[in-house]
Length: 203
Image 1: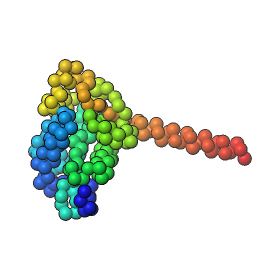
Image 2: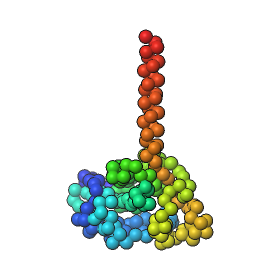
Image 3: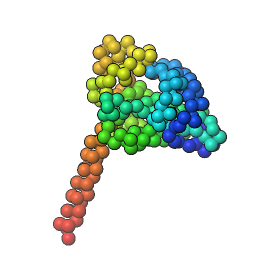
Image 4: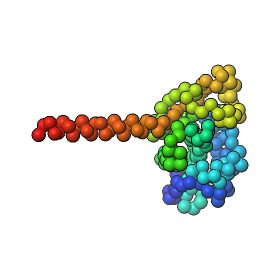
């Protein structure tokens, strides 16, 4: 891996020059894994950059390293985190996790009340999702917006999805609910209160 400093940041319109490389690597990676993926165009990638809905990683020298984006559905009640890709020479460096964490935190900051979901067939992404509080769910529990599922038409596994009435496919759906954080905080507070009570009783 190149030892250059890597910056993980919100993408801007100035990053449009990387769009074709991002699309080409996304498709190449899917072919190597033998997995399906919704095809994206350079124009759609640039659109996400212009809207502030993408995170990009680049070296100090301006070399593209990685990318991901998010999109909102059903009047901002659902947010999808999608398109995570890292250039081959920078894989296994921890940059994918940094990008994943940044796109997740960006989604949470802009849409704090929304449910965030991801559909993937990659074990590494499932692990990162799990660490962020995502849980496996059925397809019925994520967005039903037809526009989202239209994007799956370019995937080689789309016939499987359609044959199962979009109830499941080879990808795993994972969902993060804001309530989950509230439950964790409440549980932690209850545990702390219990410890304080026990300490008081022992005095």
